[in-house]
Image 1 (cartoon, one colour):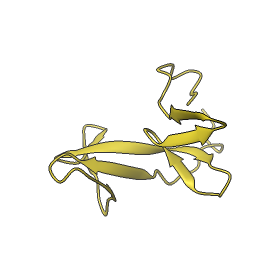
Image 2 (cartoon, one colour):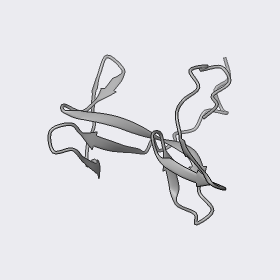
Image 3 (tube, helix red, strand yellow):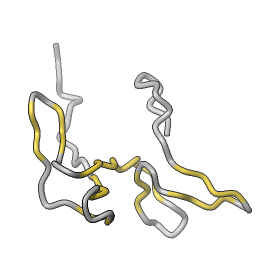
Image 4 (tube, one colour):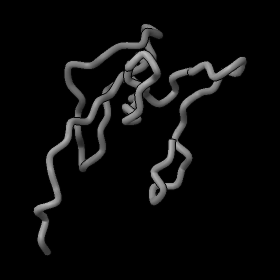
Length: 83
C-alpha cells in the first residue's frame, strides 16, 4: 500500500483538571496501548475549527451564535467526523 499521502500532524488538547477544577493546556499527555490520557484530567481535543476571531475551538467550548449558546461536541460518527 502506498502511504505517501500520510503526513505527521500535530494533535492539540486542552484539559479540564478534575481536582483543581481548572481548564489548562498540558505540557505532556501519557499514551498506553494507543489511548491518550492524563491522570485527573479530561482531555478536550482541538476540533480543527476556529472562531471568527481566529481562536482555536476545542470540544466542550461554548460558542455564541446569534442569541443562542452552543457546546461543541463530537457527533459520535467516526466516519463523518462532524463536530
